[in-house]
Image (cartoon, rainbow, N blue to C red; front, side, top):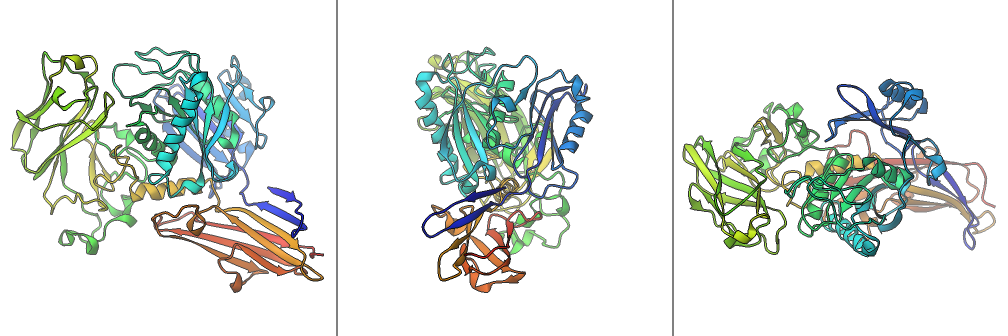
Length: 609
């Protein structure tokens, strides 16, 4: 895409090249995996997808509704339409909701959007910037959509959205990739404040609700409204975030990221669910379904070739247990751990009877961990947590109130062989009806020679599904995909984050070629605008990084222009100019698709006057 601009004073005329790859077309289809009947289809021109395979890119995943979501991206519009009809039949027979747009953004008017039958118009959106770093055509855009905020609560919505955006991009989680992101707040007033409960919705744009008493999932009842709202924003909406006006824990991942602005948990849920959405990584915590363990942070077996993070494995020379590692082994070491108990109880506690469960231990491990989550219990005296009758001394997180929180109690002694019992006893009658045990887990670990628990150690750590099937993760508990109370990704997920974002963002924003008066023939000026990483950041980050800029004139490198973003040449010079940009960060060790490189070329055919 080209944009011509006229400058006064020093610049007489300039040509600004926006350095974007050809815009591809994207198809998204929802359909039943058994019936193969389509229930939704969207097709539009989308922003660049770098290193797009010649035959196109396809990704299929299962939604929480049980439907499969199929995404297909190709540079050829006809091929995308062919895939749409192959999946859903001839377009004349489509009787399900569709969103179709094949006219290039930047903006979409109502006339350019074709909706399926029986669909209302797009809801009104008041969009405000929260944190922006560049044009949406060369950034990844995250949009907070309001649900359960009345007209009088608009300021609260903006404040909640800004707090969460700053929390996850300030000094942790997304802070090193912040220059690749834009955050927006899109406000639509609700007729009722808050979100629904007990499976009932309120009069809100997206119909967010809880289906029970537990502080767990928050569901949406109007996905078609959310799809249309995001679709109407074009490049400005890559990842929609539906935020329900509720002060307590709750959320959902998948097609939309659903959160609440809980002071204790809002940012925790947001960063975890965005990890699934943006990086396309699976869970690392125990007790999920087997299909939930996938991506660059999951290994299904222990052979070195099957470990996506083999290049991050802690080398023997750097390990405190080097005598246990064999650098030439075909399989890396598996850290020794077991999970004798894992249960999502989701039970309201009462004072009349304790909640308890039993489990068996082999007695062959050195230490163990009691891990559980609670809600509705703000005071230590309200609850006794015991293992085999011994009080574990639980205390709630300070100022947690009735919100949900996760607790770990480490016991540096082995469990004896045989049966054990963990008990939760509610002591406060006033807490009945709110006090809830959400989950309980017992984990056992080998000694220091069998299990490295140190932060920063990369190995194969076993993760246990709800049926105790084993997969492997990169670290003990360095990653927010393992513990939501951890504020950062591990190095493996962080590298995956860079890859995912740079697939949609090129390092070069623009190259401006112009003429400036200096002497009889003037001067040729070339100004390069890069995504503000490395030394161009507004605020430095605590990782090693650098830009390398190489200029080439008529096929020959101009060494004196090395690492310059603004250069001047003779005004009467003709020929080709190319600039090659390479970004290096210690957070990326492999780059098979050369996503950390960008290049642009411009051919000069006229002299500066």
